[in-house]
Length: 311
Ligand code: NDP
Image (cartoon, rainbow, N blue to C red; front, top):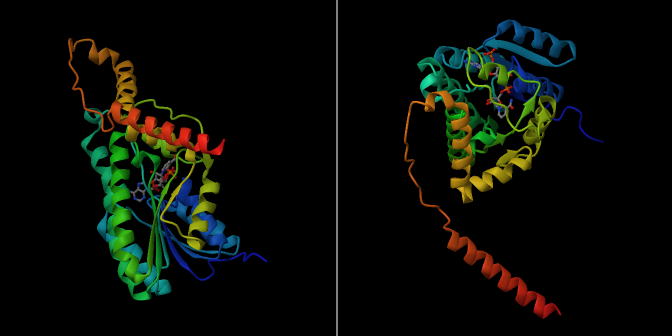
């Protein structure tokens, strides 16, 4: 029979627990038996969620935490250790992005995306790692995105923070392996039931609609995260449909440049009207056509020889 509370007694810090993926994950980790520490800025939401989790027989402690404030991160870690004496799981889910052209972003919005998505995450990990090392076990789940694999406007700054999360996660996975600490990155595409888009367009910003395919619900993703705690893997990519544009971006970045630039030209028609003649740079291809043609020719030759042998 399947264990209904497979994480019984584990202590989990979940950031971003006031809405979206973090909220659903907190419910799911608690349902799996973990003691949950709920972190985010909107305290009343955390309290409501903690009440709901307790009413369902789980444990949850709300801790108001602004990830841009070092002292609040320290308080979260201290409170967790004071309450339980250990930290088994750190689910770094909090994050946000803003859809806008770089020069239209306010300096605060630009900085805040890095402060929350990268620096806050890295600082929390920095403070949690010593206890995981002394336990010789621990799991860190870092919320990435498909945006860390292909950066396009108007998500440029957001995507760049996720590229940083990817680098942070890969390095830490290797650094912490000898201590038995597991570090995983998760790349969802579109997740429904979250406030991400609302925040991305707050105070103006650009109307941007991602392709409505391969979306999953936050509840589905939360189940996947609990699954990772039981069966870890280096990365989890949700909706492999997005692997295609990622592959195209690697092999034919010029194509993605052209499509993105065409979109920008359409969006910024008015701004471009006064610009006059422009001569964009022509970048060499990382995989010149002759290499691709050569590769295809070799593959065709091998396939031909195999066919001849088979007949
Ligand atoms: P939501 O906007 O619903 O949730 C974002 C969470 O981050 C909130 O709980 C918010 O809490 C918290 N947060 C924001 N700023 C801070 C801060 N300064 N300090 C502490 N917490 C903060 O969005 P999602 O649930 O969709 O996003 C969760 C993660 O998933 C993000 O990292 C996002 O990049 C990633 N992601 C989302 C995708 C999607 O389609 N939704 C796709 C790919 C990745 P509060 O405001 O109360 O502080």
